[in-house]
Length: 225
Figure 1 (cartoon, helix red, strand yellow):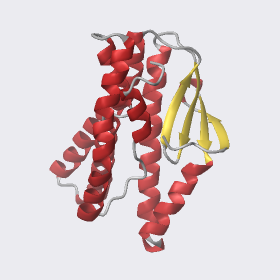
Figure 2: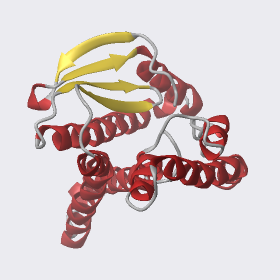
Figure 3: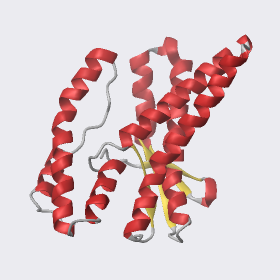
Figure 4: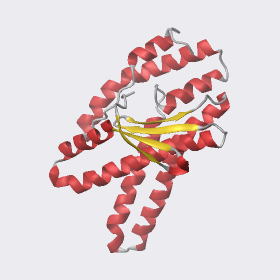
């Protein structure tokens, strides 16, 4: 996980949950501007705003999962490496599954709603709304990408946590951790050639890599489950 770094400022978000905005979040925005060039400043600003909103709503999904189970939420943190939802106490195993799953499900719902809205605009033939439809489609694809990305079965992503919880349904804690670590280790090792392929093919560079050493220790049973 990318460390969130120092908090730049805090605001009160939806449901009254405090939102801490890390300095690295704005550093990421600056990097995107440099990569895209000043001539694309408006497009980059829109993309950063979409990414910011999508990650926030993802974390709000986790917070909602906490609230409906009576688990207090301390804060949501947004930083250059993504975000996380911090709650006051652990939930039950089934509760954890719900809390974790609601993040990607929010992104999936946003993808569906934005896609339907964009398709409706395009089908209407309203040329004046074509740009709006294009931005809605971009927002939809961004959320689908975030949903699929977060479901990759590696730590600390939601997919890795859900995989370990799934193993806990049928295996003792130690074996569940080792099984989740072994699966995550395979994906963590394949991540690097996949990054190179995506960069060479699409020109995208993802500022995230799952920790190989963490999964190695999990697979060896050296971490506490």
